[in-house]
Every structure is written in C-alpha cells, then in structure tokens.
Image 1: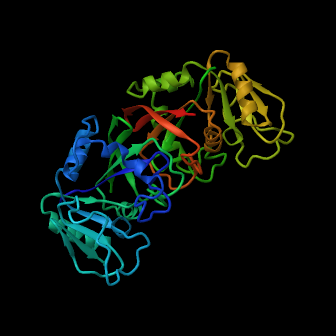
Image 2: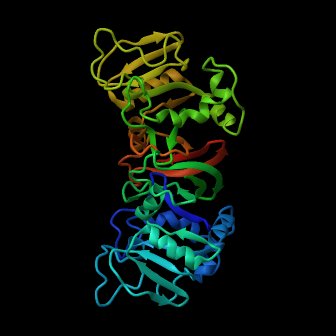
Image 3: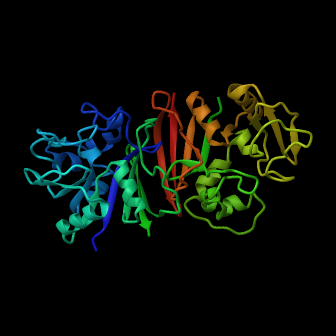
Length: 214
Length: 214
C-alpha cells in the first residue's frame, strides 16, 4: 500500500501555526516566519510560478517531498476560511486563487457537505465521514503514488493517534511562537512510537525525519 | 565574560521530564527514556564510574558539553526532593549519593535558606535571592570557565526570558511524553531570538545547537 506521509514546518516550541489565524494571517501571528526557509528556495518558487531562489541543503528535501505524491488530505482549518462553519451561498474557494499549487486531487476534511471544487488542475473533494474515509478516497486517487497529510496540527494529530501515518518529517525552525496550533498535543507515547530516520542541517532550518512504528 | 550554556534532552513533543516526578521517578513517568542515548555512551559512563559504553556521533557532543564548565546552576526541582518546601531537620542530600557526578560548585535556586552542602568534591550552595544572584555567584566560582544551567525546564525558561543564556543545545529524542515539564513554556519570540548553530544526527537522538541573540 502507498505510504502516508506528512512534512511540516514547526517552531522550536512546537507550533505549526501562530495564534489568531485570520484572512490576513493564514498561518497566525508570526506564523509566516515558519516558511521563510522554503520561500527562499528555487525548488519551492518554481512550482509556485516565482522566479529565482536559492539552492542549498534543503533543496533535495523539498524535491523529495514533492515527488511521488499523488493526493493530499488537509483539514478544514488549512482550507479555510478561519472560523470554519457552514459554507454559505458564496462558498470560500481556498487561499490559493485560480491556480492552486497542488496540481493533484485534494481531500478536505469538514463537517459540512459541499460539492467538489475544481480550480485549474486541482480538484478539492470535501469529505464529511472522517479520516479513514478520506484516506481511502485519497489512496484510490493517488494510485501507486503516496498520500500527503497537508495539515494542520489537529489533522496530523488525528492520523498519528490512529496509527495511520507512515512517515513524519519536521522542518524545525529556530523561532519561538509562544502560542498557536501545537503538534503532538495530547499524544502520549502509548499511542505513537517513532523511529529516527535522518537529520539534515540546512540554512535556518533542520529537517528531522521519523518513521511511525505501528 | 564566560558563556552561560544549557544543554538538555527533550522529547519530540517538547518535554524535558515526564509527568508525576517522584523519588521513584526523578524524571517523571517515562522520563528516563530521554536519557537512553547518553547512558549508552562511554563518554558519559566513564565520569559516572560505569564500565563500557559506545562511541558514536554523540561522543564529541557530550565531551564538548563536559569541557570548559566551571560551575552549574540548577533549580530546586532538579535538586529535589519532589514537592519542594522547607528543608526540615534531616535535609534532603540530593539524588546523587556521597559522590555526586558534578565535581564542581553547584548553585541551587530555592525559596528556602540552607547552609552549603559538600559531598566529595561537589559543594551545593543554596541561593535564595534569584537567578541574577545565582549567576553572579556561579561566574565568580567558575573563573574563566563557562557556567551551565542544569535545568529543569522552569529555570531554563527563566534564564531564557531574562536574556541571560548564550547557548542552548537540545538533544531531541524521538519519544512523545504527552505531559510533563515543558521547555519554552510561555516564551514568545518577542522575548527570545535564536540562531541555529549546528545539527548533529546520532543514534537515537539529534543534537540541535542554538545561540541566543540578545
């Protein structure tokens, strides 16, 4: 069966987004600082339609994370809008404009039913019957490729606690956010065992990769 | 001025000790797992009077952390006993028996006055007038050597928030404790800026070293 992977930027104090997420601050206050390292990279800028960028020790990590992924699962919090709730008559189209950077099927966990939304070559499918159902649909869509858990923290914690995640890579950024969305919240080791796969030092970030032992 | 350093083992979910610290579990439930990597090393076993042990990528990290340190400051929580409070008529002698492994002056932050305690070549001095006073005394005792903040979490957080720490090395262990003594609690980035110095991958642990920018 194809692997279920997650990779996410995290502050040294354990947050994957800052406090008070809003339309102005999708990643919460100061949360954008978690992504400074990746936005500087050509390997990230090119698929996002941006010019220039650096090549450094993070480059193969980012290239690897983009390769061999056939579908993404994300939480309603990542899709937005902040606050959640029913979709309404003029439903939120996501943060990413007319040409989202996913270029693959995306499955959004939500409590509120909605028809699929296709923008350019990305189709968002809204799943209301839980993380197992979302994984089943994503695996079918991904074929032989892997499935990515795109966040946020709450969704990753759910897949971890359920023993469904195979690999977790943390991009550890030397900032302290003090508050926000905490990874590993209320997950004790009775539920999750991790094995260290590798650590890669790069400018302004360290990449720590683990396998999840089930 | 000599450097103020801290290095400490930490779970992937940010705890430097597990929950419910007690005389049976000085590091809290499952907290001993934070130290499996170091207890296996010859570089740690030899100064603790134990035979055997491994040599691996952690060895130079541990040797470096033992070198050039002339005094340690620790919190009452690390010195013990669990629960704290007045010392009483038969005061607690620490966890370490007649020959503590420090072999240097140790300054214990406490709310309760007590005469110094000398065990073999370690003298514990009890400081009741705060972290600045403890640092001043430790620096005087250390001479040209550095001063180590030995923990626990609360004391490290205090020195971080006060902008007094120069270097912080985290030994990141792939375990989740779920609860316990959390490093960086209530420290936002307004107070503390960190710069990544290095990352070293080793068996069962990754060593992440930062300088604190003041």
